[in-house]
Every structure is written in C-alpha cells, then in structure tokens.
Image 1 (cartoon, rainbow, N blue to C red):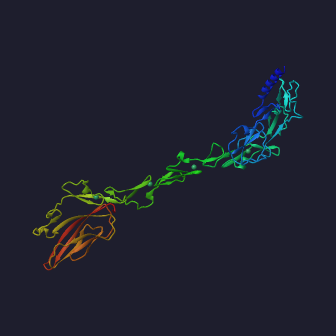
Image 2: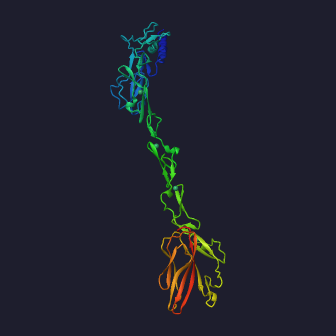
Image 3: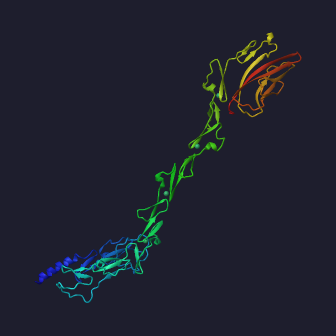
Length: 452
Ligand SMILES: [Ca+2]
Ligand SMILES: [Ca+2]
Ligand SMILES: [Ca+2]
Ligand SMILES: [Ca+2]
C-alpha cells in the first residue's frame, strides 16, 4: 500500500516538475519551482565584456564597467544589451512581488490529501495540484498604472517596458540622446529613439552609427571624382574648368585669353585650342605661326612648262615667258633691248630689265626694298635714278645712295593682295659728249594678303 502511494506521489512530483516555467526548476525538498542560476550553470551566458547577473527566472548581461554591487535588478523582461554607456538603473528597474511561505515548513513526510493547502501564490487546481495564480490576469497585482505586470511562477513582476525606466515609482522615457546612443543626429521618442545622419552620411545597419556615402559611385562629376569624408569633390581635365554647380566641367575658351596665341586665327576646341592658317600657309612647328607653302618647290602649282613659277608669301605666280614688243628685241630671258642703230629707239630706254619681288602686306615704313646699281661707268657721266611710272599712290620713293646706286624705299603702308608694277628709270647723263640715255627696271611687286 505504502509503495503504491509513494509511486503515485512520484508521478505527481514528476508531473509537477514539468509545470515550472523556463528559468525555474522544481525543488523536491521545498516542493516549489526555484530559480536556476544561469550564471553558474551556463558556461557562456554572457559575452566576455559583459557580466552575468542572475535574476529570478532569468539572468542579465550588464557591461562590466557599469556593474556595481548595488546593481540588483529583479526579474524583468528582456532588455537589449546596451552598446553605449547607459545610466545606472539600479534605482529600481522593476519591483518583484513574491508570496513567501507563511509559517513553518510542512512536515517532512509526504501528505497526500485533496485538502492540502497550497503555498501563497498558488491555488488548488481541479486535478488536485497547486497551480500558480496569474495575478496579472486577475488584477490582484499592485503594479503602478505606468508599469506592466508580468506573471511569474508563484508571484508576479511589475516592470517598465523597453525604453522606460523607473523613477520615483513611475516609468519614465529614457532620453537615449543624452547618453550618446547615436553617433550623429538623435531624436528622442517616448519609449525609443531614432538616429539619423548628417548630409553625406548614411545610417549603418546598427541604426546608430553613420558612414560616409561614396558619392562617386553615382558618377556625379563630368570628369574626375574624389570622395571625401561627408562629401565629395569634382576635378576637371586640363583645358576645362569646374562650373558653378561644382560637378560640370566646362571647356576653357583659350582663344579669349589673348589675341597673340595664334599668328592668324585661334580655334577653340573642347579641352584645348588650335591655330589655323589661311590657304597658302601651313602651321609651323611652334603650333602658332604660319609658314608660306612654297608651291613652286612642292610642285603643287598650275604653271605650265613654258611658265616660270614665282613663289611668294601665301601665294605663287606663274610668269609667262618674256615677249619683247617691237622695236625691242629679246636680249635675255628677262631683258629687252632697243638697238642704238634703230632710229625708232632714239627716244626710248635702250634696255628694259624685268624683275619680280614680293612684299608683305602692312610692312612697317619706311623700308628699303630694292637696290639699283649702274653696271657700266662712263668717264664724265652721272646717273639719275627715278620712278618713272606706277607710283600713283605715292607709296614709294627713290633715294640715291651713291653716284652709281639708289634704293627704292617704301614710304607708305601698303596692303595686299596687290600687284604693283613700277618702272624704275636710270638716266645716264654725259655732258662731255652731250649724251643722255636711260634704261628701265620693270619691277613687279607682289604684295601678300597677310602680314606674314
Ligand atoms: Ca526614449
Ligand atoms: Ca563622401
Ligand atoms: Ca578649349
Ligand atoms: Ca607660296
């Protein structure tokens, strides 16, 4: 009979043990659910920098720096492990109410009776066992209206919800911003907080710290982009300048900087510029000067084999073969003569010498441009040099430089393109033999269009 009773008791105890909530274990001696000290039984209850504090029905992990002997937070709902310094909440985070057994411990032998009294906080269930009273359900608790009631085995807990702490018996919002929960911007919210970041930063997945945005990934710059902490910078390639928006690169108009970049014409290009020359010229090695194309040397001309190619600045001329008009006869390929024996030649220059030269447009004046020299010297003779024709614009004059020579001087600026034909006369006077005669240099001057 006794054996059967003990067996039955065993079964009851075994069933009873399974009713203990998590964090508690059934103690046969006191016949109640008692707290498990997880800090002793769990080898890795908390991280290394956290200290384990056993609680009734659970345990807490608290930063070691904040832990003090007075910290004795009772059983409370799970609260996130603070990463940043948190205030000392040991003023009382929650209050616990536990019904302690009244009077002496029951006799040491088992009593099996339906009328066995249950411990405080328990009530006799329909199956004859003592079951926990849910004080929170029955409103039998004494929690403050700002607190939340949590039923525990054999008791209950009054606690503040997450984000609140107990101050003077009232649950008050924790101002997380005061305690530096956020790295940059913080907004306190009742029961919580919200972190945000300055412009140029983005909130990390931890919702607290901020990291620099690499704006360059979106390629905001026309050219080069440099990411900086909290911002970014654009740079432009050579020949460009950064626009007012800080991202667009605009071409520099180098041609507007100076009129002397190019000898002839400056052409602006994206990122650079180039000099161009008029037809008949090519760009010199310096990239800015214009050099005449010698069409006669390169063969890039239209002269016939009978003609003579005459090159000058920017152009060339095909000179027809010399034709001497009667009574002149050809003396050489550039000279016509009128024979002294021919009576019709008496009042004419005895020789006409054909010469060609080129002249740059706008040449500074005065300028010596051509020399005349008597080749034969008669005893007692003297020479007069003069411009016989072609100087209607009075751009030239003749300056005698010796008894035998003279220089043609450009006295007024002349602009091309233009061809000037001057008849330069040398008069020979010999009073001893009463001789007066003349010869002509027919000088054709090709004035170029450009001053180079
Ligand atoms: Ca808050
Ligand atoms: Ca940045
Ligand atoms: Ca440019
Ligand atoms: Ca030429």
